[in-house]
Length: 129
Image 1 (cartoon, rainbow, N blue to C red):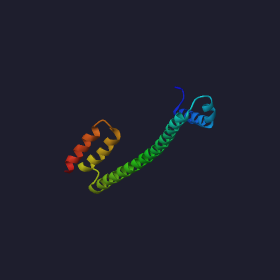
Image 2: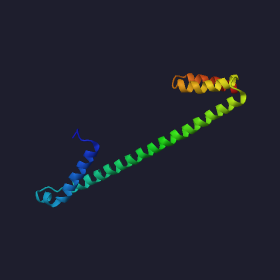
Image 3: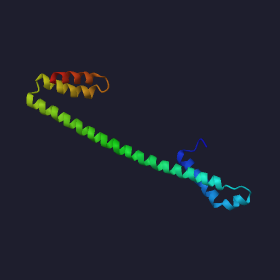
């Protein structure tokens, strides 16, 4: 059953359980008592559907958490950018401190993951200390 996907495998198990349950007496008459197998299969099918439900719920929670994370990150960035604009507007765009702050924002947008932004941030933080 390698070609069956997860949903198909779960449905197959459920259908076999239903067929066995419906035809329990016929199977017993034929000389096989599937009672233990029906109980085992029912437990496995129930667990499979419960686990799938949990997976769907967790995936939805992850999407919600991702959206929340993105929104709070955007809010933090917008607030920090607003602070930079306020400082630059107050002390003047030509002041070295203003240039450092603006260069940090520019470096962050152009050098994500290269370490350049970290170097500029460290330099700006030293000057403010």
